[in-house]
Image 1 (cartoon, rainbow, N blue to C red):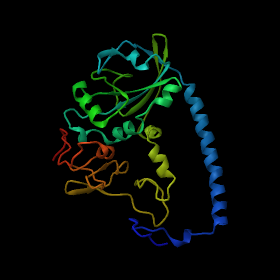
Image 2 (image 1 turned 180 degrees about the vertical axis):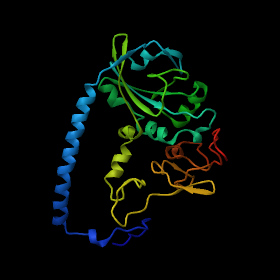
Image 3 (image 1 turned 120 degrees about the vertical axis):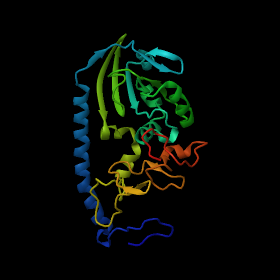
Image 4 (image 1 turned 45 degrees about the horizontal axis):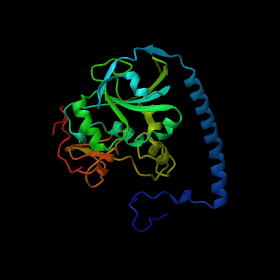
Length: 271
């Protein structure tokens, strides 16, 4: 198998994998059996998730937003259910220094219209101070409702990088579910699409066939390090995945005014 003109692939797959259509269809049918079992297992897990016990907490706790301080209860917008993504924050850092994984999540769920139609509200809560968060939200062009939970404890504040689900019964508010890490992947549909491709996500942990590209190594200053997860979530102005002072979270490059940079601007940034 050779590269097509204009292809950037330097790691073509082995010819041993090239078969006729009938052979491919048989292999595809075998995989489909596993895929259907995986889907049914996911349905069973979702059913168990809906049966988890709940934790009641004070819904009058105040969060800060564009209208000043408001009760957490307001985030429901009169609906019975609420999904909150708790966005990490680096105090004092410019836009390019904010969390790349959280940026990926926020960018992929910038439209809550279908959730709203199903009676579910969506909001973002972060530990950052509102006077820093507000210009970041404007720069990114986010349509979601954003709030600062700075100084608050769980379940409204506390650990960030978390998807949390809540239920309202009148003025009573309940925490029903949380997840983090790879549990957040449903927020990023692009990852599921990449899982369908022959090269996958290009992550170090993946089990890929011989001949597939090796997971990318990204540079951070003079050193080269291997990020096992999300190495491609940042890139430089030329679109090259890089983890260092010249990078931004990838979605930021679509925003007006996103210029090349020389520092992440974080307190722990050695550059």
